[in-house]
Image 1 (spheres, rainbow, N blue to C red):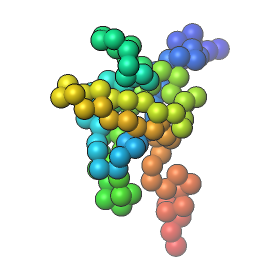
Image 2: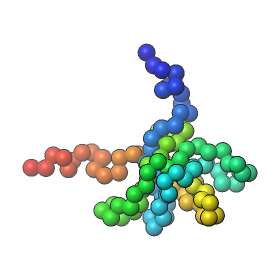
Image 3: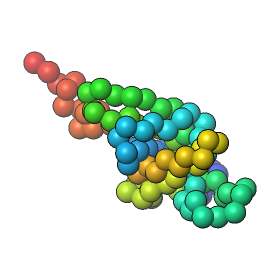
Image 4: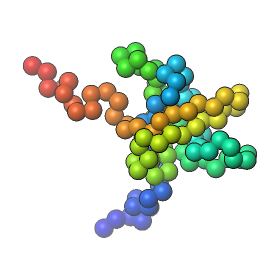
Length: 107
């Protein structure tokens, strides 16, 4: 038995977001769009829920929710900011560090 809202393809799903420019970071709460050429108000497809700078990985990354996000891994989204900048990011897995869990099996 599945709840209708849990099986909708276009529901917002938790994904990782990796800025294309590793020196930029996505502000928490930033809205995400697929096309920055659309008229304002833009059709929002998600938003950034948390954002981090990670020295071990060498780049910043964020978590966010995106409509149909798990089926959009590898695609790009844009975060148009109030100051006029637009940050481009790739939708990636939400597991950034040790995705295979190898470091938990240290002897």
